[in-house]
Image 1: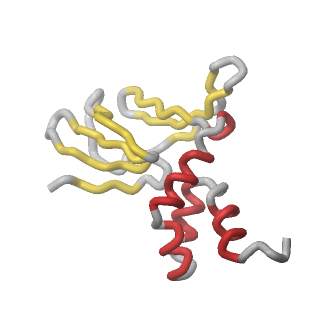
Image 2 (image 1 turned 90 degrees about the horizontal axis):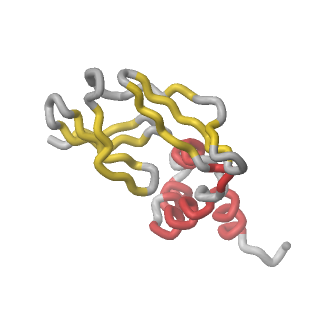
Length: 128
């Protein structure tokens, strides 16, 4: 174990953290920010979060939004966590157009605004 470089150990640990903790870890130091921003890190982190124990489903129903874990042995959902929309919307107004690595491309149907939304961190970006 003493032969493993510190960089490799840190990388292996960080790729197993939940996405929200990875986001928080970016602000710890410049080296971690650089490491956590690489394509290699993103690919490995996403591939490790695809295991069944990490699978989640985003349920949007009228004005509410919740995230629920998927219970793989019976294809059911576990207890939900409420997610607050970080944008103003109306009833049945939110359409998810696409997704990639946990980011959602959302269209607000009443204004035709396109948003990038990360439900894990609740951050968003508006297309202007």
